[in-house]
Structure formats: structure tokens, C-alpha cells
Amino acid sequence: MSPTTNSRYNIPYSQPDNQSGVDSIHLKEVISATEVAEYYAGLNQQTAYTPVARVVPQVDIAKEVHDLRDLFHPPRPSAQEVAKMMEDIAQYLELEATWIESFREQALREQR
Amino acid sequence: MAGFFKKTLTLLMGTDDFRLPKIQFGNKLTRRDLIQRESEIGGHLFGPIPDGHHRQFFNLDKTTWVWYEEWQTADGTAESLTTRYEVHPNGILKVQEGAPYYYIEGQELQNLLTATRMYYERVTREIYRHDPATGHPLPA
Image (tube, rainbow over all chains, first blue to last red; front, side):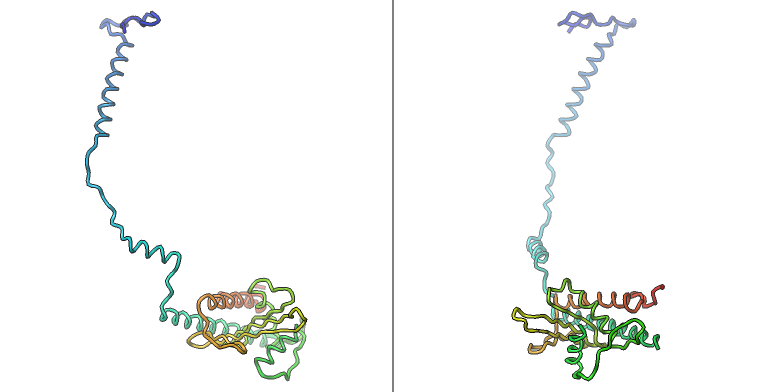
């Protein structure tokens, strides 16, 4: 392309605006082309294949399966755990009943 | 209503030598009256009661919880079932007439625990007007 005209439409470019004779439009084209070149160069560098050690996660398949099984079929508590739970609940129920009994007694006392 | 409550107490206490007084405001309440009021709340803790059924659930004393259910069969015969839950140091023994006794566990134990908690909460608040968490009287 001529620095002074558009080849297709024959439209004159702006004339040099200073004594150096540098056409601003032409200058832009030159810079743009340079930038594009640099951009692709950089891109190539970034995407260039560089082999790295693949990090393979250490998955314990047996554990994964076990965890999944637990999720859907929780393990039954041990006999010892069941016994402890039954004792705790028995104590709790007795405590509740004691409170209720004390409220009853208080209600009966207050109406006398 | 008083009939089956009387029957339940007869079954549990081994006597029918009592008369159940009507609960009225102004009357002096007895311990039995209070338990009967509690049992009305307790009967509704397990969800809707089927038509023709009457259910009561109540705390009888420090170590006994009672489930009583009464209904009529298709031919009009009255049926009832009393289940007693006895609190022992090592667990809750389920006692039903004609059935083997056993210590409840698993879901059945959880259900009973939930029911007794709700019973305590509601009875304490609605009958005795106390805060179930602190045991302090509720503001009037």
C-alpha cells in the first residue's frame, strides 16, 4: 500500500504533518504489525509444550468404596456403643420424669 | 374418655377401687387428674389418631411410661392395647401383655426418646406453666 493513497479507492492519506515526513497513519500500521508479531511470539512461547511431572493423586480405592458404603449403609454401632446409648437414654427419661413429678407436686401443693 | 383411663390405671395399679373425678376448673386436682391432663397431650404426640381410635401416652411415675390405645374392630368389638415402657438403669424395657419383653433399641428407642422429650416440653409449658429449659415459672 502506498503511504500516500488508498490503493483501492484512491483516497489520499493525510499528508505528513511535520518536517520529519512521517505519515501518522503509516506509522500506526507499522506499529500494529509489530505488536501483532510480538503478540504471537509471546503466545507461542506461552503455549509451547513444556513437559512437567504429572501429579497423580494417591487415591485409596478401598477407602473410597468403604466411605461410600458408609454413606448409604451406616455401620451398626458396636454392642458397647448401643449399651451406653441405652443407659444414657434411660437416665435422661428418669430425669424428665423426676422433673414432671416435681411439677405435679408443686401444682398440688399450690392449690392447698 | 374417663373409662379407658380408669381401665388403664386399673391394669397398671391392680385395683378398680377408685372413681375418676371430673376435671373442672375450681375443683381441687388430684395427682391422677394431672396425669390424665398430661395423657391428653401425650396421645397426640405420635401424629394423627385414626378414626375410632383413642390413644393416651403418659408418664406414670419416675420409671414408667404408658401407651394406651383403644379402638373398635369391624364387628364392633372393643380392643385395647397397653404398652408399658419401664426405665431400668441399663435401658428401656418394653412390656406388653402376651408378648415377650425386650429392651428397645434403634429407631424404636429414638422414637420413644423424641416422644418423651415432646411430652416433657409441652406438659411443662402447657399444664404446669414452667419453662422446660430452666424449670422456672413462665411469666403470667
